[in-house]
Amino acid sequence: MAEMQSKENSHTKRGIQRSKKLTTKVDLTPMVDLGFLLITFFIFTTTLSEPKAMKLNMPDKYTGNNPLLIGNNKVLTILPAGQNKLFYYFGEQPSTMLETNYSADGLRKIILNKKRKSHNSMVMGSKLWY
Image (tube, rainbow, N blue to C red; front, side, top):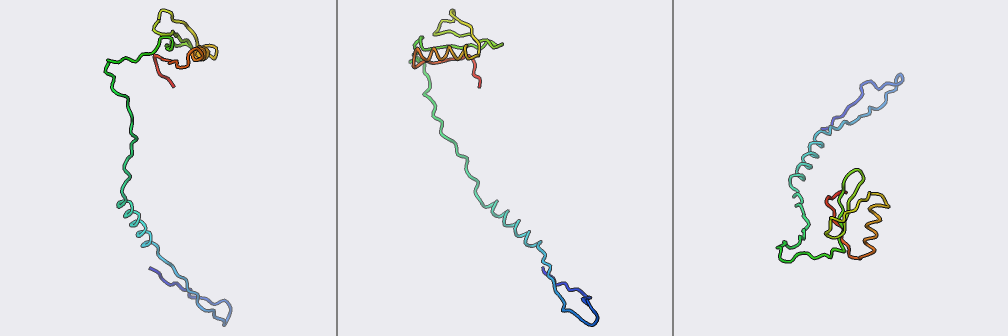
């Protein structure tokens, strides 16, 4: 626990004896043990928070009876071809496929022109990229 320590020879000058100074030494090992016991007690007694998942609203299952009708003049299909090339066509007519690139004068200009012509345009691609 705690013990008192004293110095034996405390003579500084001849004939004069100073009073003995006592120092204390406290052993903190039991305090550390108590701290670890408290930490483990609180870790084991707390309830872990339950995982909360956000509800995901999915669309109704498609039955095939009522097809999604989109006007052909509102659809732009883009097909990436590699080497900075893109092929695109409007509506469902791949026979009128045109070629462009990823630059501001290429793909961006085509999409902006399509949006100007119709407000509710839909852009479809064959692959998704980020």
